[in-house]
Length: 348
Ligand SMILES: Nc1ncnc2c1ncn2[C@@H]1O[C@H](COP(=O)(O)OP(=O)(O)O)[C@@H](O)[C@H]1O
Ligand SMILES: CC(C)(COP(=O)(O)O)[C@@H](O)C(=O)NCCC(=O)O
Image (cartoon, rainbow, N blue to C red; front, top):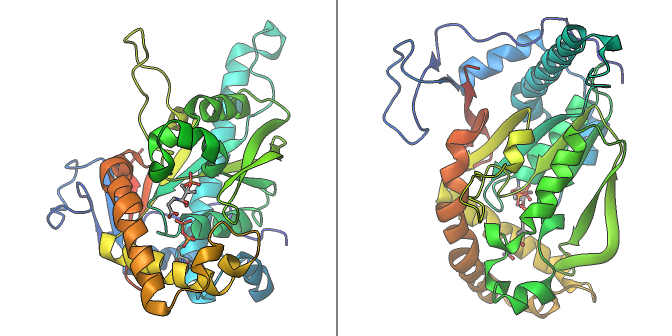
């Protein structure tokens, strides 16, 4: 569907509902100008932006992004994600202008011009089960409907997890999703190649069904307009190298990043609900790693989900994922019903 939006698109909300704050968990905003690098909008302020953003998604388009058991409705998409996609689309246009400025500055005939523009890369971070893949899939759909970002590709960092056999060898099977369970160098090489303008970049593929890397399978990224990189740890800072110097982080190659945020208790219950639904669907397939969970009673399945949550995913959230929230350009805060209640933007 062609984009029909106005050229200016989303504008910052004015005074009501717009404040500047520190961390999302901090005390109510003071609203003092200059007191924070963020602008904090409550839902009312954010959804007013909808008025200047035309709907570019039909119910049929939305069907495609509905995942397992999702009850995301068109109204939430219109009020929250549509303005967000417009803002991201405008940021992509801004990056294209920066690229053009660099090319002009260096001069086409100089021999050092940067060449064609590289993909606009958006990182999407947050806990297991917070809704990262739902947000990422929605944004892929919405962004691809804007005229200047029609080609949007999505890569999830689970493809960079070490294979189970290697995790087992390193004693890390119970720490899947922790930073050390990934081949971080390969992930960094991947984003570096994308932002170097490589015409074709390959990423390995993970199967949630078999709970392991699929040998030989890959995702191929062919210089899209936008690449969304979604994963628990995409905002992890760089690690010190063996020579004591600090290397680069994956997020150094992001043009913009998004952190999906919610109360830990809510995320735990979404994890549990998803686990219960999977038991009736994916887990019962013969090739499923979790085949043994398919025959559990409701109570047993809930207990197992809680056990996995509190032994792996919650500690990872607290120790590794949540501390990266402040590094994001945009934070979406969700309520227990998945509705977005606040949006925090860096002033840039
Ligand atoms: N906006 C939403 N509305 C309703 N349900 C949602 C929404 N976002 C996520 N969910 C549900 O929450 C659970 C976790 O979402 P998912 O996108 O799979 O999380 P993640 O990719 O972070 O692990 C899933 O069961 C999903 O259906
Ligand atoms: C595959 C995951 C590590 C998420 O990876 P990501 O794409 O965020 O890098 C996670 O969904 C997972 O399976 N964690 C292991 C614990 C569990 O089974 O919930």
